[in-house]
Structure formats: C-alpha cells, structure tokens
Length: 348
Image (tube, rainbow, N blue to C red):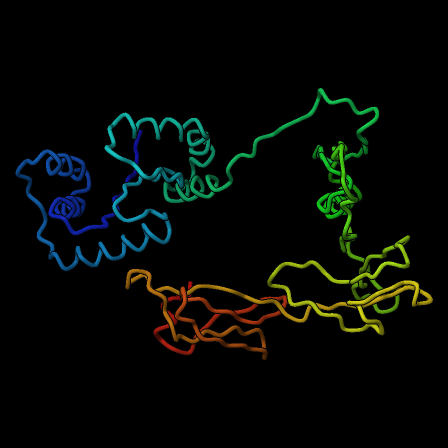
C-alpha cells in the first residue's frame, strides 16, 4: 500500500532544516531514504536551499499548527485523515501503526474502494471531511414499561425518537413543539417517557413557552405571499402579572413592531379580549475575529471590513481586543469585503 505524509516544521533547529531539505530532494522516490539518513546521522547529500526560505516555511507552518490544528507550542501532533492526536511524547513506530490501524478500521479502506476512480487528493479530503462527523452513541429503552409513564405516538417516519422529559421543566416545554413538528412532517416515530421529580417544595413552572415553528410553509390565499406564523397562550391565570418576550439566538435582533399593550406588565384581568403583539426580525449580528497568520496570529486591529448585499452595505473596524469585529446584516446572501489591500489578505 502507498501512503502520503507531510511534515509541519514549527521551529528552526538544524535537524528540522535538514529534514526540510531532504523533502526537496529529486527524484521523489529518494525522499524517504534521505529522511532516514538524516535521522540516523548519516552523511546525506542534500539540495542547496537558503535558510531564509526555511524560516518563511516555519512561520507559515507555525500558524497552521496553532490556528487550524490547535497544537500548543512545544507539543507534537500526528494527523491522519483529519484525526489529530496530540500531545504526544516519545512516538514509536508502534504508535503510528496503531493510528493507521484505527483509521483503517474506521472506514478508510472502504472509502478508498468506493472512490477508486478519484485522485488521492480527493480521497484524502473526503476522509478528512467524514472524520468531522463523529459517531453519536445510540441508546434505546427496550426494557422500560410504557403502560403508565410513557406515550407512544406512531408514525411512518424513518427515525425513531425516544424522549425522556420532566413534564414540569422548561426544557420539556421548549422541545415539545419541535417533536410535534417533526412528527407532523412524517419524519419520526415517537415515544415519550415522563420522568418527573418525585418531591417538590414549590411548583417549578415559572414560564410558559410556545415554539413558533410549522412543519411546512403556509401562503396567503390572496397574493400568494408567505403567511405569518405565531403562537397562542390559553388558560393563563388572569390575576398574575405576566411579561411577554421572545427567546431567540443571541445574534437575532428582534423587536415588537405592533402592540397596544405594555408587554412588560400584563394582567389579563385588566383587558377584555386578551393581549397580542407582532414581532419582526430587524437584523442579524455577524461576529468574527481577524488575525494575521504571518505575524504569529496577532489581531489586525484598526482594519475596516464591510458587508454588502445589493445596494445595502455596512462597515466596521476590527477591535484591538482579540481582533473582534461585529457587523449588522439581514437574511440573504452577503459579501464580506474591504477597501484596503492589507485587509483583503485576511478574508477567506
């Protein structure tokens, strides 16, 4: 079997310099023998390449090791098809053989067989991409009784979902609508096991949740536009002081656009036909960090970036603290750009 390997050099030692020179040897078939000779201290004929070129390589490799592989300075790492093993001490041939065996058992041989018509570059990238999808441990509950503490919701979906819920918890309120939508869309067969707390000093329900989610798009009958969706709360205690709000991802800027009521102080005894409100997504907050990989990953403070979509554009300046920047945008396709030549190097 043939194997491909690459070395990342993160320090400018004489040994690393000689190993790097051995990698430049021609023809390529002699590289392995020259590497063995350098490691064994033999007198090996090496190409004549300036040390300055090696210094530039070390800077780039150090940035890749730190930013991409997350290898801390002073540690050794071995990466095989996207699997990174670090930190490593004294590495023996048996260690490398073990990593290779684990990779082959994880499907590398099968992937190579399926993609035999593709180049080795494509196979290597596919293996690395699949490595990101770590397998999730599957757990089933065949031994649990379902007569009194579980609900079985039959369906024709390809997925079997088993949920264990505390019925009075906030998480149960939040996930119940998601399970309902997945079942309504014909995607799952559902079993729900109730797992309440046996002793309570007070009722734990402090909030009431409704998830705004539908299994399919709905359209207006008149103009064919996408219909608005919403949720309804019923049977709330009328004498309680309530607050209405949305729980959204942190980068969603959502605000109430229409409501005649004070949504922070709601008492249903004081209104005749209930309380209603309309919310809209005003914009999304796009966050990022900007670093210079050629300068030991230092923040690129002061650089200006911009987002543009059609005639709409927003700009911002990179902060000195961790290279953080923030931009305002809306749903759709946006292009990140910069007017300065220096900043264009960092956009990827």
